[in-house]
Length: 222
Image (cartoon, rainbow, N blue to C red; front, side):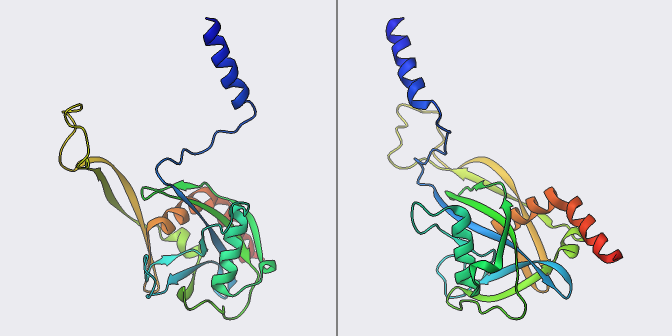
């Protein structure tokens, strides 16, 4: 019993005041994005980017501005602002952060930290053409009135060549379906918004629909 008490006491002291964090043994990596709101002639809208066709990862896909933190002491909020400025040609003072949304741990190992805020800007964006082919906006009113199509994606795993089947003979040798998840798909002006961007957008709209509707209706009656 004495050894047990010593072990638990030592563990307790090391864990005291420590906030549990994400286990990163699976080579998880972080990125931060901004869900940017802007004023347009069509009303308050969400701004999206179209990734440059020459990029190696997800070329041509619709996304929010964002990327990885550049150093260990850069906060995710700061990373979202910096990346947005670099991609859209903005000054950081033009971005006002409202707060952080729920972060996502994805199936690819990416941990994405979304923030929502608004951009004080009028006219054309001087976006970085090495990263962005196009910028477009979608009115919040349209997004609230036009729910996304919902498709289904399935995930499976397969044991590698080094797997010890002699110890675990019940493990399937072929692909083994593990779970499924919803894929949200929005369409607007010839653009298709899906994947993580649509998932973040869908969560944002669900959480704040009542607040957005009230604000838009109040603006209309003024």
